[in-house]
Length: 318
Image (cartoon, rainbow, N blue to C red; front, side):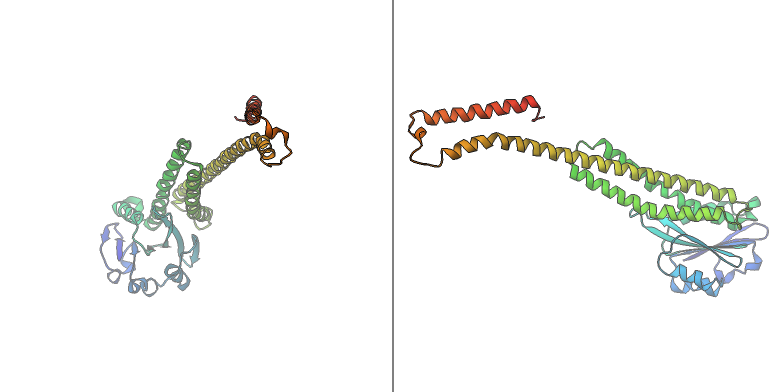
């Protein structure tokens, strides 16, 4: 699907035109949004707009890293949207020229719909009509970045809940949850950090240095800096939780091993006595005692009880 927004020289908004009905010289600027286009529609990037073949190839092939390329008077951006459920990146390609904006994405995105509504509502008003392509590019980037925050906030809520319920679940379950959170943070980081680097390049580019919307792009860059810092802080927190759970698990194992060792130590002399009297030699004088059996049991009981008492006083059962 291709939807178009055209602004006349008198800054009137015209929507719903097909690309065949639009003559670029008749309008101040236009925005064409390619949303999940058909192969025939995708070919119009080259046949109608005559974009550079390398840029068109980047649009049609596998997911590209966020970047900015310059082709004569056209700036080509590769941006990343984010799927909230899977945290997988979705490529959004953007062509920005003096009198046009062309956005291209293989999936329908609510962020692009929000950007379309915002630009459509203000596109022909005041000075915005004169610099609409730049404002449109800013709006698209801003909407894409704004959708990163809810995903990160959801992870932080789960992290806070994990900290508060840490005593209720087993260490194994907690470790699985921590590693799942770290995996999601890593996927989110793979989207945020390249976008941060891209906005840094945009903000510090000589082509954008004296741009009317330079401050707006700087604001997006600040948001991405905040997101990157939050992600790193959350990753450090998950690492601390992981180390804490490992320490708790090791301490529990040490306690169990100490308890088993104490129990084994108590039974070692008792086993020795039972082993001696279980050899059944004929020349063992104690075997003929009338009360020998009871005396040996008493000896084993006193010996075991004495060792338990001594271990308790030494704190070995704590």
